[in-house]
Image (tube, rainbow, N blue to C red; front, side, top):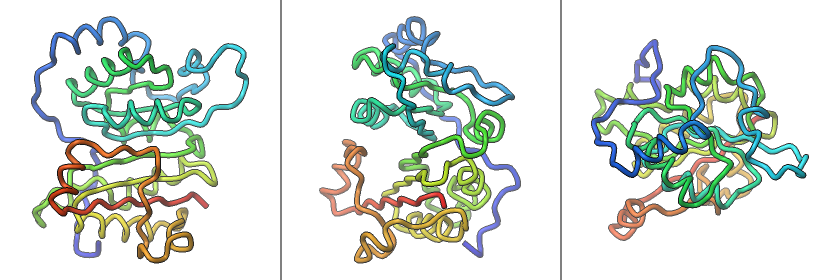
Length: 241
């Protein structure tokens, strides 16, 4: 938005306090070595990182989707189960959230998730080559409700151009929020990026630029509660051109 002064350094997170449960600690110990990817200042070898995600006799190239900020991992695990032929590289710095997703991975026997417990901006800058991603998900980022805090919002032009350049042509960026002013800002920022086009404008013009909820994104308990109270949810799906 024109009146928002964006910070020079983008951060994809705000550290939150939280206690790691005994179950999450066990998941870190047992599953961390397989599913946690250390941050590295060099391009990620996707084939090596996801070497055991597919069946040994499956030589089909698997798409890779980046997720930024997965919270406690409920939606991430659901999507990974719904799209078993897609690999998911997931960034989250909240330790209880990382532990919770590792626990879900074990409980649901998921193989197509890798977690990088590091700032997603650094991951994008240093680990992801240009045009290497088939998709990117950013679901319900902190809306920073107060106007004086709007500059802290994640969805802003510097990050979006970084993401757009990492998407393959035809790849997609899917954002979702339950805060209408943030939805409006998202729509404005994404629409202004020349490397992206709004797929909903032609496919669903009645939604005024927003998209129907894609089948793979589940309704969370929080979202269901909000919808029952009359709160809206806005999905935006843009394609790399």
